[in-house]
Image 1 (tube, helix red, strand yellow):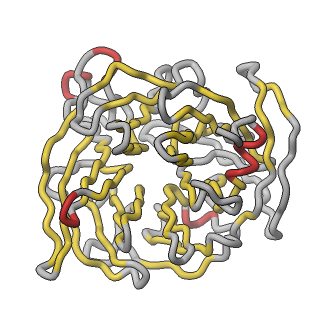
Image 2: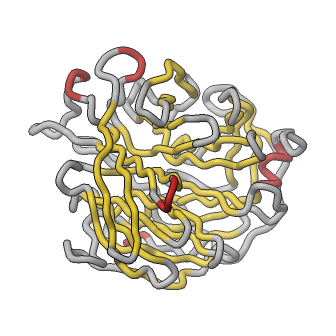
Amino acid sequence: MRHPRRAWIAVLLAVPMAALAGCGGGAEKGDDERAMVTLTELFASQDSPADNLDSLAYWPPGPWVLATAKSTDQLVVLDARDGRILRKVGERGDALGQFRRPNGVAVAGDLALVTERDNHRVHVLRLPALEPLGVFGADVLRSPYGLAVLAGADGQLEVYVTDNYVDADLATPPASELGARVKHFRAKIDESGLEAHLLRAFGDTSGAGVLATVESIAADARWNRLLIADETRGVQNIKVYSLAGEFTGQVIGAGLFKGEPEGIALIERGEGGFWVATDQRRPRTVFHLFDRRDLRHLGSAVGEMTANTDGITTGECEANEEGRLFAVHDDRAVVAFSCAALLHALGLGTR
């Protein structure tokens, strides 16, 4: 996330164009003195700094990775096998098929959902053509960033959208005004078109569950959880809510994140597995792993060159040696890591 009134220094890192292979077993000591394993990226996509890439989603039939391009107002479609850019979709505007500052993206079946910060809405498109089907939320969303989607009954979708609205001075409102930080919509698409309505808006207004600066959100229907990252400097953690919008009292990653907590993705193992959470740092991003069942921190990893990461997503990692963790590198490229190599390096391969 890029915030008003926050100055950022762009450090341009060289992105190798050739595919990389293998997994390094070396460990390093970070500024928090925790040992971290180092992984080698499998590939890096074409360098495209003008796009300002942010969030990622995986579509298995492609196999594709979809990336939002905030500055060029497009969706970038990449081949998940080698990172080749296959096409770019969209342009600046507010009509169907057009975007203004697309940020979050999620895939549910043959649907792609995209949040548009500056159009204040969620855009729904049909894969693989990325045909626009409709939009919703513009009547209640003020500054939407991330989203998580769960398939419900009768083809319905449960859509959770973080809304990082600010006051007239572009500052975070007081906690008493943060009770609508997440919007929960129910949507359905059938032969009559797209229908969606707001079920609830939520967020604690006092105590440990306050959601001050929000972007990334992930949903876990099996464990009735929403993981919501709070990027506020000095807070920097992930708060756990129920799917009904109630704070559970659980906070993960407190004191662990040194940069902003950004993308969150799941490596599933039946009822268990591992949450991967991004710690957006320079010169290298740190990826923290947490147990899906009890949310304990299990270890951390860095890439050889991946830095300043916003979004991540996983593809085919459930029980597949070819499964991958995809990550944005420095707003300008997409890289891939082997899920199996990541888990093996952290001693989690048999769990």
